[in-house]
Length: 255
Ligand code: ADP
Ligand code: MG
Image 1 (tube, helix red, strand yellow):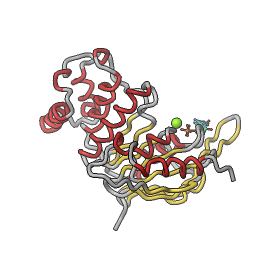
Image 2 (cartoon, protein in one colour):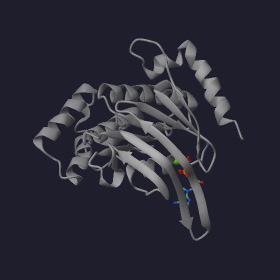
Image 3 (tube, protein in one colour):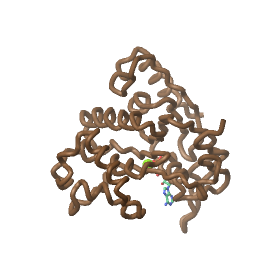
Image 4 (cartoon, helix red, strand yellow):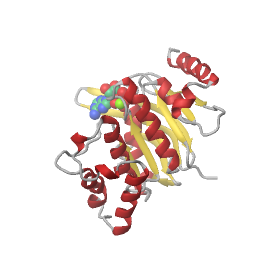
């Protein structure tokens, strides 16, 4: 069966007047439909570069990236991107922020608006429809940013350290919240994080990168046996600590 996303021997080099920076080297992996993948690695190892390549914003120096079997440049599948900053515009209400993607992509149809209304209702933001972003907590803003991304019905979600601006407590609950919404909506997601616990708590598989130029050190399937696994519950599972130690060792392995 064809994977949703396939990377084969992907390499990326930044060329600038100061020389060349080898950011990624020989990256190969597949992502299956409905999977939640986390990518961890030291700061500057090429994690954000990897997401930019998958989104088609950057083109690999060599290697291929296929989405539904087609080169990402020719793929018709929408990709949703979520970043550390929520990029909600203060002069727009929450609702008109959520509609923004639809407006830009000329998809502001009654059907798609209904989808936004349903998402707002399902995820407890209906009563903030006409509020301005500053009236929402950090966690609610991230939830609104996720709904804005989901409004476009993306086939693949890319999350680049979306929780790293939040304080620790908020971060735990927002991560739980966002990951649960992504599961409920049956989305495929790739989360980049430097937080090992966060990666293990949300992911079906964790991809560990080496320091720059980022190569794949190891791919670790996470199997936590429990009914209705959530990130928060996973953190308390007996297996969690073993995965933490295993991936910690890989991250600090310098050969
Ligand atoms: P990460 O997200 O893992 O912290 P990045 O993907 O942002 O890492 O960056 C990987 C490496 O590429 C870093 O050493 C960074 O300094 C370098 N880099 C990132 N963007 C550029 C750019 N536009 N020009 C030159 N070098 C860059
Ligand atoms: Mg980054």
